[in-house]
Length: 87
Ligand code: SF4
Image 1 (cartoon, rainbow, N blue to C red):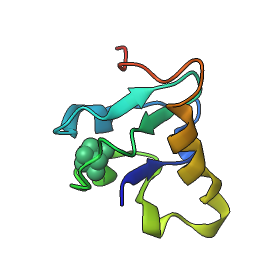
Image 2 (cartoon, protein in one colour):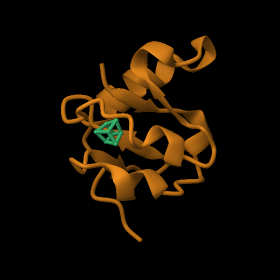
Image 3 (cartoon, protein in one colour):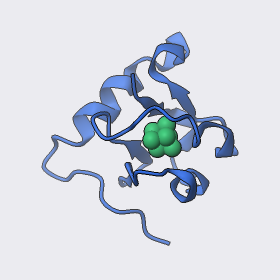
């Protein structure tokens, strides 16, 4: 069950999460950061680092944000997938 980045990241992209992810599975899209669902090892290190509380374990995503589970997944199969975060 991967972690998921939700709405609060949009246009924030703080990237504190990127620094703590042990497997570098957090990528940057045009609007927000995304966690690769097949690469995330479910360690939980990123969740407390997010200053806007955008990150949740998939099973704990609030109901009004459930669409972000699918958004994180399909982002990586799009024509313009998220890439390595820039600083
Ligand atoms: Fe990376 Fe761990 Fe967060 Fe998954 S839960 S995105 S592996 S820091």
